[in-house]
Image 1 (cartoon, rainbow, N blue to C red):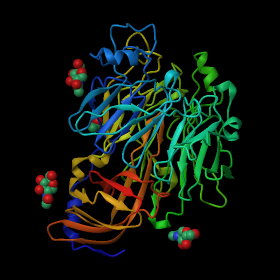
Image 2: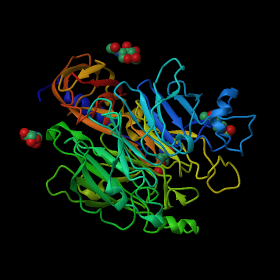
Image 3: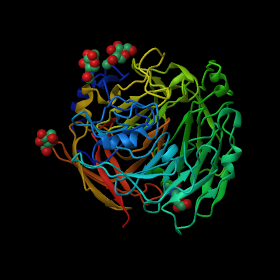
Image 4: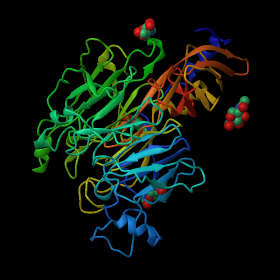
Length: 547
Ligand SMILES: *[C@@H]1O[C@H](CO)[C@@H](O)[C@H](O)[C@H]1NC(C)=O
Ligand SMILES: *[C@@H]1O[C@H](CO)[C@@H](O)[C@H](O)[C@H]1NC(C)=O
Ligand SMILES: *[C@@H]1O[C@H](CO)[C@@H](O)[C@H](O)[C@H]1NC(C)=O
Ligand SMILES: *[C@@H]1O[C@H](CO)[C@@H](O)[C@H](O)[C@H]1NC(C)=O
């Protein structure tokens, strides 16, 4: 890599010294007192809107609808609802105006799953009751006219608590699991009548006494084109083309369960050009103590798991390397920040996922720096929110680097009074330290890049940067579908820079190489970010397309 910076080192060093960061703990801002619906599910679209929805049968939400037409869908036969009123169970949040508008759901999306297709359309599947086999689409727009549509075709099997993963083949989605469903299937089907496929691993990992402890399996697409599938404490590498298990990984150390309702979380660490995109590493954190589900039914809330494990799944001899978080955690979201660090946010310390099954909210996010040495220094504790984000809360990364946090409803219906952790419709943004304005002179700005890029293609990036000292990084990030502490399809890929030039004015032009294949980055929209010494630019959208 050739770096031809023309800079005055002394001057920039002086500026750096002046911009000491006073607060590394980040800042919380309340965005809305009423986000309308519980953020059981959230997904950022490439139109800079966020689709939010819960379940249609949870009764009156925070957003009353005027249209009788929508009542019909939302009441969904729930006789407890007053038939003369009706309520939204999905909204679109517009980031720039900080406003919501209601969206009408035609079937119940309770504990469902999703993935973005290459066009930026959200494919969303399953749920409960009349929605358990539904396939829905949300095509994002900027004119506030888009809404949910439903496909005429149905899922082969009932999928409540399933997981979706986008595959390298254009617009093909893998859908796996569900309560008492030990199969996977593809959307679309090819051939049309291929049906679903048994996966004994799902049956084997099921703990009957604990409501499964293997629901919402963690799924990640490895750079070798196979799927990493994790449920309860076990994991496999799966060749979905031959329908064969390619590898079984050792059981993750530590008693207790990592998947629902044990509910820890997992993340695929950023994929890096520097190792030729040959390496895929997964990290799993937190979860429920052994017996947490049965105990919580008796109102005994066992302390959650404190441990995290990392495993390089592309190694010949993969092993779990264990680390400890600063505290026990269940139901936390794990997000990859533009810096490549991992944020662990939301959730609780004790109990497990489910209605009224946890206590002691985890108000403080943790930051994890994957490469920091010594490894004992990787975790730090960030500033506290004062809102409990228990069951049915979620968090997603926004293009401006903030984390959108919403939801919490550990009850069947919206319950605002006389309970310990009332339904919470407040929406917050967490701004990590890197958004501190004291760092603005290190922040790349005015990033522009072509919007459509082919695999392996070199492409130009323009941005401005006053202060360049050592290195500038380029990363892309696939916006996940967030629900139940899973960030389905979340993926960060760091890109190689093959040339960079900086003018006196601060204008920079760089040549960057797109990911080599859809195995590294399935086709679709990604947030492109320039990171200068751990300070990210605002992200812009790029689209990777098949050549
Ligand atoms: C973050 O926490 C520190 C103390 O831990 C506090 O001094 C500071 O005011 C907090 N910052 C914000 C922006 O809330
Ligand atoms: C939320 O409500 C509180 C109390 O009524 C009010 O002080 C605050 O300004 C509101 N915040 C927003 C973002 O609407
Ligand atoms: C990645 O793997 C390929 C194929 O096995 C190999 O040719 C290449 O040298 C590897 N790259 C790195 C950086 O390890
Ligand atoms: C950078 O962006 C800002 C805000 O959009 C704009 O005012 C400014 O003119 C831009 N600078 C250049 C050199 O384009």
